[in-house]
Length: 231
Ligand code: CA
Image 1 (cartoon, rainbow, N blue to C red):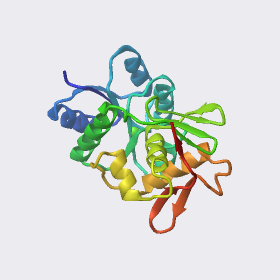
Image 2 (image 1 turned 135 degrees about the vertical axis):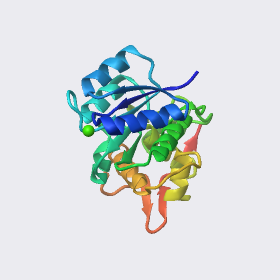
Image 3 (image 1 turned 90 degrees about the vertical axis):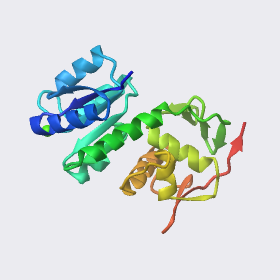
Image 4 (image 1 turned 180 degrees about the horizontal axis):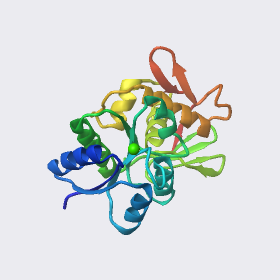
């Protein structure tokens, strides 16, 4: 059965182009123009992925993203006119999975939709519980407990933390981390890694300004700086 994509975009011309490209690629498409319609549809229908514009009438895109994320893990790709919004979009309070900067090619968007669907379809890696400092990383349940409290990480944050912690002290380049996140089908912007790491540090480091767990290795990438025990 075809996967169902909801497109939320108020500009009719852009909406039509996206709808055509996704249908052409074999997806089922529900297209809406307003944020409040998007929230209604996701409450009523099975939707596998959301392509979401930020500037919308009714309820704006940031709010739509937040409300969907409150009780769903449905992948969300944000359409953004400005790359400066990247930070906000990938931010902890929003939890979007990916973004595409306008103007974009329909082919690029279709590739991103496929990549996002593929990565949630992948079986979670079987693995051991990792303990480091006051963190407990469970790759099967995909949970992270810090000092006894479970903390919420986005998909990408979890993958980066787990990858680094599974090989303490080994330096991973940004390319390696992105290729891990995207299973080899990585496109474009390596700054995303830095954004994810910054948010991750806010959540796992005792002093995010002086990180000891996720260390920057200047000119190369990142490394996990603490000892890890496995159970
Ligand atoms: Ca718009």
